[in-house]
Length: 266
Ligand SMILES: Nc1ncnc2c1ncn2[C@@H]1O[C@H](COP(=O)(O)OP(=O)(O)OP(=O)(O)O)[C@@H](O)[C@H]1O
Ligand SMILES: [Mg+2]
Image (tube, rainbow, N blue to C red; front, top):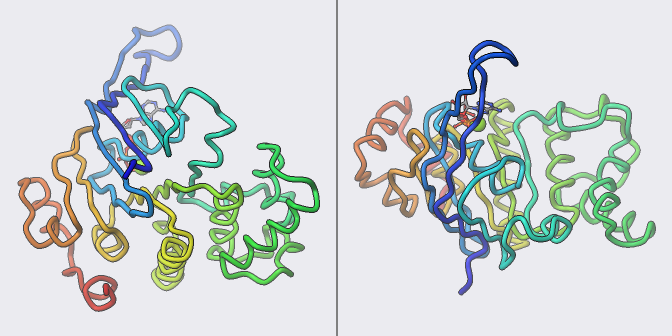
């Protein structure tokens, strides 16, 4: 079966200057030859300490930063056709308030990704907005709500709706529940799970929280200093971590994968 996502030998770095814009040019490598694959409908968790390059890898897949190497999404190589990419991959980020235009109603916000990608007629787009609201567990009246009339959890549902609207097959969720309190975070996590089950969505779920990743993901990739040091099924990585770094990461988790993890994982 063809992979939904293939990341091959991806390297990426940032250029900074030592003293504002006149300083010496410093190239800082961040990703060193990343290889990662996601099968259709699979959820892969990407964990690792802050600054190791998780967001950078997500941004490479989303085409937001330059990189070397190859990224193939649902049969299409990144860098070929931008518009076709919208139907393949979409993102959900950490801070829903920062992702939504405060001047717009939720309905317009949800329609925008379809409009900018020139998908469907006006009537088709409005129908899709209703469908998407249902998918994210909000009733159609939410179309008329302003952003300030939504709770943080509802805002994140709208962000997820925007990602779903173009019917992508892959979602990059970068710390998408990290800014939410525990109960709202659990609801959003369950929503991701439902969407995965009902729509067969593949997902790269980036998180520094190992318990969340264990609960949600089929497979886990552990990143350290821009390299993937271990990959395996959630059970393998948790039950029998091979890389010393994974062991250290697991030891740093205060609670065992209980609460959200073992009790509910089926
Ligand atoms: N736009 C940028 N310009 C320069 N350096 C950057 C830029 N974005 C990230 N970096 C650096 O690249 C490295 C990797 O950052 P990245 O955001 O990918 O880490 P992360 O694993 O997502 O961390 P976190 O868990 O805190 O979100 C860090 O050292 C960071 O300082
Ligand atoms: Mg990050």
